[in-house]
Picture 1 (cartoon, protein in one colour):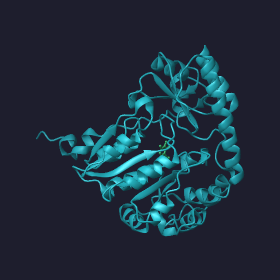
Picture 2: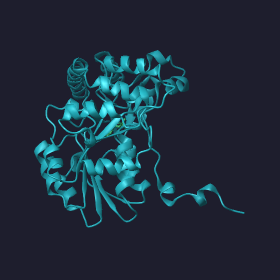
Picture 3: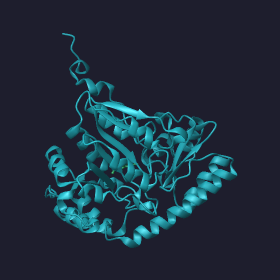
Picture 4: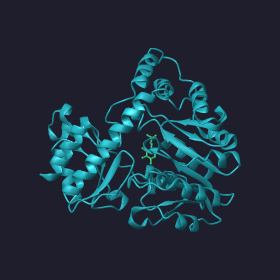
Length: 362
Ligand SMILES: *Cc1c(COP(=O)(O)O)cnc(C)c1O
């Protein structure tokens, strides 16, 4: 009887790469015998200012009701989002992080033999979602680590069902011009769904407004998250904006109660925390400038970016990653993205950035 779990597994499970996450503070502290309060994490593009205060207060209040299931329909959050976007609540699907809505898209629209198009250094979740559904990833080379939108358009075939684009892109940090994004979105054939991943849109001065395309019946969706500028990564809330039809289909795939009670409460309140957003944006702009100048003084190349992280090139990225860990600074190696010489560094507080730059100089 030689039949293992592996023999029984669905084929895509066997080729599914394991997501390499930024390492948690407590785990690194234990491994290297460090005091966790001295360890800093600049690895997962979290907000160094902490959670949105309004979001945190709402989540804390909601915890008193955590014996109850959350609202499976995410009614109040979708109503609040509808007001913010000038759309209807039926234009939103809320997920356990925006990662979940990308998995929902793949589950709803990708079959074996179908293709999903994205950049060679695009966010790895597009690849994971595609492979999970037995579909074929079509990874379009990114010269100079920038999206080649014309090449992405040219990579679309009869079999393409999804095209993913993040602006700013993670892990490279590069941004595509809103006009070029709209042009690409408007140029796709009817059998292709364009997914614009705007996880970092709140850090930009201007982002592409896809609402007119959605209204005109184009197959475009936008994803956003509360994990980044709102500082709610640990609560796992993200959402998709699209037509009522696509949202209805995704809601069939979505599991009941997929978003937690404190997560829903926090997300709704955080949307009113304009004050926190302004502070986070200003702190990030200052931090980006601080890191860019620091890298320049150290003679290190980086990819210019407007998100809350920068990719920086080092002659010995793997060794530097280890050395930083031992010094209590967690960053993100990019070898999994075919960027062996690069580290991705989240913008921290002024003091955290200073500590990182000093450690790099050592
Ligand atoms: C962080 C990030 C997300 C958001 O992930 P969540 O599941 O919402 O935490 C989505 N896309 C990109 C490109 C990201 O960097």
